[in-house]
Length: 128
Image (cartoon, rainbow, N blue to C red; front, side, top):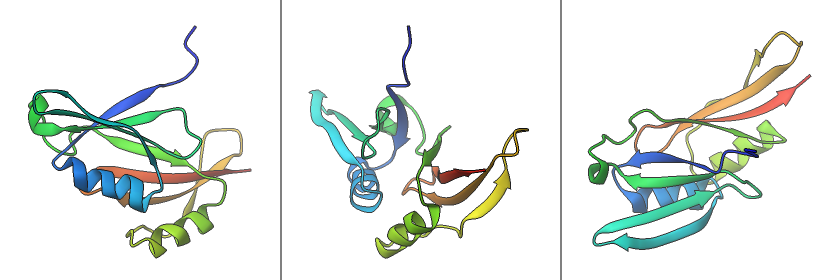
């Protein structure tokens, strides 16, 4: 049986700039960063305590454009503290906004930023 999403791929222009954003700004850790073939680099990062990783793949190596087809949503326990920490790290991020989510009376509070390639990155906290 499938237990969880193991990872996803994002196509980026500059793997080093993307690594700096996700590791130095968002606090992710590097799972793997190595050459997997001549000129091919596997760069995989994961949020603290997370099971799902993101491969930051060089777009040109796959005939893709940076930022093509990716939007990421990450969860947190305290959206206001997370936004504050990200701003202190130099991340430009929107103010948290509460929006209804589904039919159960639940809502989420979300803030949005973009990575160096223009991929949308949404940080959310579910509230009742």
